[in-house]
Every structure is written in C-alpha cells, then in structure tokens.
Length: 96
Image (cartoon, rainbow, N blue to C red):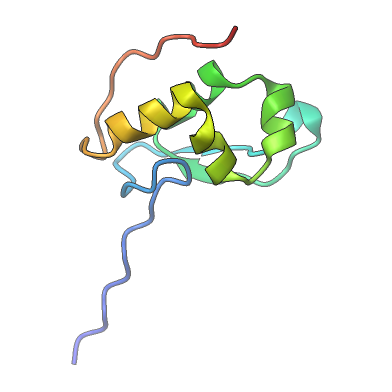
C-alpha cells in the first residue's frame, strides 16, 4: 500500500496551498524581538506589511483571526481566496 500523501503546506495568512515562491513572515517583527517565522505567499507577505505597522503586528502576534478582522486585510483575504497559489499582483500601501 503506498503511503498517504500529506496535505501540501499552506500559507499562514490566507490558508491557500503555497506555490513555488515562499517567504517567511515574523508574526512579531524582528525589530520587536520576534524570532519565530511562518510560511506565506509573497503577495500575502507584502499585503500584511502594507496594512499593519510593526507595532500593530507585535500586538497581534500569532492571532490570524485578529489580522483577518481588520477591514482592509479581511477584504484582501476574501479576494485572494480563489486565486492560484502562484498568483501575483501589485500591492498598494494601505497604512494610515
């Protein structure tokens, strides 16, 4: 009997399967003492940094539910949900 294939690794932010390019996000930014990393799509990585300041990311840490509750980031997650794992588009800065 062949071994059961494991599910492909998924993006920490959007939960879609990862594509060819994988980046690693520090939930707590390195500038705020963070050491742990999570695998993410490049577009997800750029969008989380365009949406949140390092201070906000440090406060939210590993709480992906809180990240998704932000109106701009929540809309991004809903939009990206049906895209191919290697999908890419320009990222706009949203921070105020």
